[in-house]
View 1: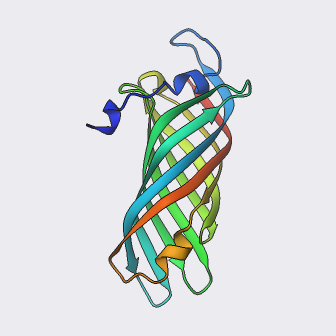
View 2: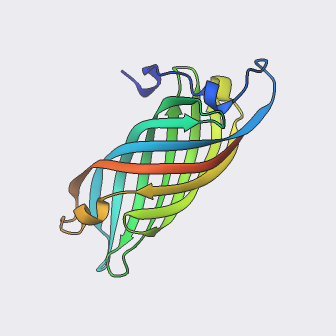
View 3: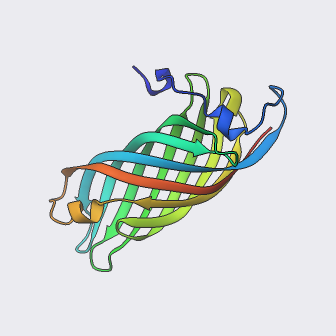
Length: 176
């Protein structure tokens, strides 16, 4: 079963916020939250830094101004650098957000901060089906217990994070 074959309620109803003709331009602002799980490997890249190479996945819950909520499946490959000396981190990822087999949004996330609390941007970069041509961005905050898990692992060790949270505030979007 592929990620695109997972059928969830269409994210379209929330992202578009209003009933509109199929080809009409639309824009709006929503709030989103992604409870996620992650898995990957930790690598020591110098005497004070480690790198996480892996992916997070979960369900994205999106809420519009009227309180209507919908969800979609999210999968994001991630590269995260952690400085063990300063306790700082920086991460970059790309996400595939699947609302239905034909309706997919692609996004990029980036953040910096303290290990376990990373703040940055979530940018909508492309789409398929009803999301073709989508663009926009919002404020991102990612919380993770990785700081409690990664420090004692050897280079190349497998790391599984059972719970994390990504919050996307004021996600502005526009479709052609």
